[in-house]
Length: 275
Image (cartoon, rainbow, N blue to C red):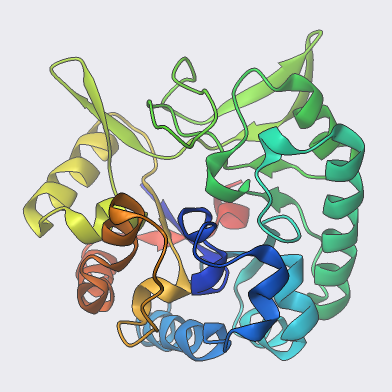
């Protein structure tokens, strides 16, 4: 079974958990580190001849167009992460439509690819947000990977979503394919399988156990990571609060080796190839 490897391309100061530490209007005052850290990812994937999906912010693409071109030239899928990491459940529908359209146009012009995939910042799209899914479908998206079917204080409500990929429908019409983030159940409790801060926090044996469990249930494992998670030397920001600070900086020096372990053991590809 082919699993799916994905990266959300954003700067370390754009993370939702850092919103109290770095205001949106001050983003341009901070040094960019996304090009170098994404380069580390591309180098690793190149050594193992693995293609992945890169969900890129329009804000990043405008400032680093050569990075988008480089990712595409390496044979990876380019997909949309929205424009500037606004949480979808805080956005009016028309603003969402305009920003997604702008981002897709920019990414397509730089990559030469048709943009068919979307992931909401901080998984801020819920299973019941049908009007938002209609917007995605109307803009030409063929799949989404925004739903996290577990309870979390920041994610949109998707606890009732299926664990395996499924079709989003409205009035019997298929809008697009949904690839929910991988969670596994133990004794009736859902836990995330392999991505983000969970990936950095969980010991290797638990990640391996989660991957094997999901695969045994005939579900593709969806791994998601960010460039800043491969950058242990990034500046430490203050003012984000104890919990956000812990989640952001824990085990940054282990991400590269932990990812290398699983891609050397299991088969991974992009959403586009699986779709």
